[in-house]
Image (cartoon, rainbow, N blue to C red; front, top):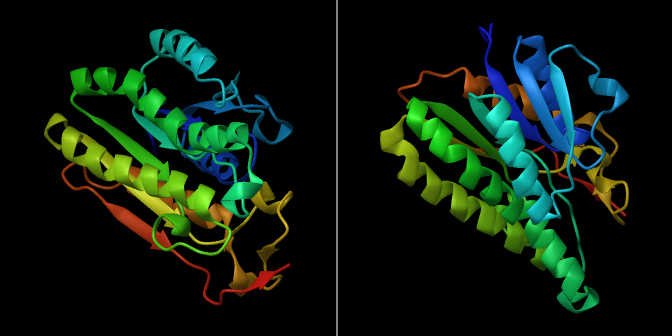
Length: 233
């Protein structure tokens, strides 16, 4: 049981973020979810508060965060939002490059900038970033996405060191291919068999386990892979 704990989660309108929010609601967390779409039917719950914020607009994000954080304290922050652009770097406009970095990397940094002073004053808190296997090993057509995820991993590793003496645990989860709407607009997807993809519920369960570990240890990094990797195009 969460005993009245409160979680701030990004990307809660679909995929991994939605699954994490549902898992924590089952454990009696109060969840505030940030996503571009805001409230979705799958997350209508008395303990869920939807915040419709586009993470691409960092100015609006910072302003809205101030209001959110003044209204309530949080025990944990899970950054699950993400967007995938895949292709040769010359295929992308400058605007697309900037958007990918803002959504996948900078938005999480901006939220931490606002949230961390409050966690430090309390002397406790947990932060979990949903990274990617693309932060561990590069692949063809993945330069833009890998750049953002490598950056997120570096930020997480450094933040963990900065926060260790303040009672704040920072963890990173790097999933391989997850069966989710992430692939809806991409020209490839994981294979159809269950063994070819991670389910969003599996990632949510790992995050739940991290949040329920002893306050005296840190789970630094967890890498998840489907048992049999398969890509269909």
